[in-house]
Image (cartoon, rainbow, N blue to C red):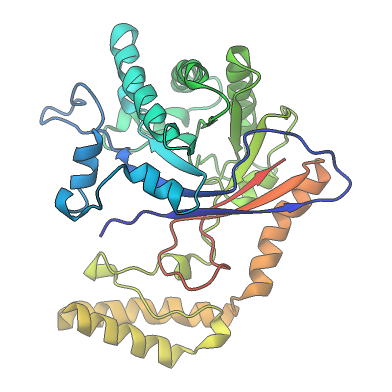
Length: 360
């Protein structure tokens, strides 16, 4: 099942700090399948021209006749959203240079203009994927001085120039998604700090006005963010973190019968282990999962659920974890915090975040 993840930002001003003015983002929606996972041919190369057009993208989720008439981005804007986080596979850019890269950039520029014409802003997220491994995120894991990082950074500068041409008043560039570089403590290499600082400098050589979204290591988590030294900070810089905790709750899903998970309540005090197991069993029965798979799922889920209730997840733990990001912002004179909700597997209230961000 395909999902379009909502991305909602709730801003909290931290008193005593001056207000800067990067791109203002209030309430957005994530668009993940249109320009991500660029189609690959049978010989393992990118189809050319690269990326999907809108019709191919929309038809991948349901018949085109099932979509409401009119421009889908105008519909998103009419719902009260003001931006989309547009995830983009950098593979076709990394695999090309010269005229071919320019062709790919032209396609992406046209896509961004299509979105902004609806009145929406765009967070343009370069979102490496592994379908052609040499162009996945692994290419940047050889250290800050590696050839892979240099190649990736050069591609980012080309993207930045393209977005500046589109118009800095409507777009922000998020050059990385969930980078690794574990661990995020004193035993780490410090490579990610250097990569992020160098990438910001690369973009600033193209434009000081383009809003850049900086990301910490360790999967872009809060831990990665708080390990980041924002010495490269400037007035047009935003900061992001991704929040999936507790993972057992945010990743309840039914796509894979071998890993069918459902039934954990929020907060954990709203239920108990027996009720969670009963709920999972009922969901699997309704989905037609066979007996053998149901038995395996119950065994796996019982241990996960027991740990979830033992840890007592609820608002207190959530606020404490996000409080680490708040403290980091205060310590570094970052004036405003924005919590971002996104890709929530099971949603019933606004305390369930799987993505998050900080902005000045």
